Length: 120
Image (cartoon, rainbow, N blue to C red; front, side, top):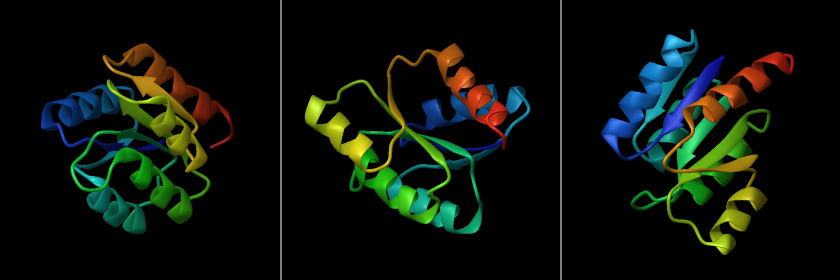
């Protein structure tokens, strides 16, 4: 599986990258929305985990733009602080779901496994 991780917190990005790579998946990382769009234009991915609170382009906007670029990909927004309106906007923009921080790593890995079993 090709997994995209978008988070402006370097510690979160590196930790998730190591965990997902340890499960045998290829990980693509970006530190913000524009960076995510740049890598998405160059590398296909199957599933993405996108931080909601980022400077400039938030996770909801990033999710919507990624959905337009790679509509087959499954997108999840990660957040510790999101209003119901923001969650609804992310879901309307193409997010398959919301993951709340602190992250349940087993759930995140389960989503990847489910996607992989789904035929990719």
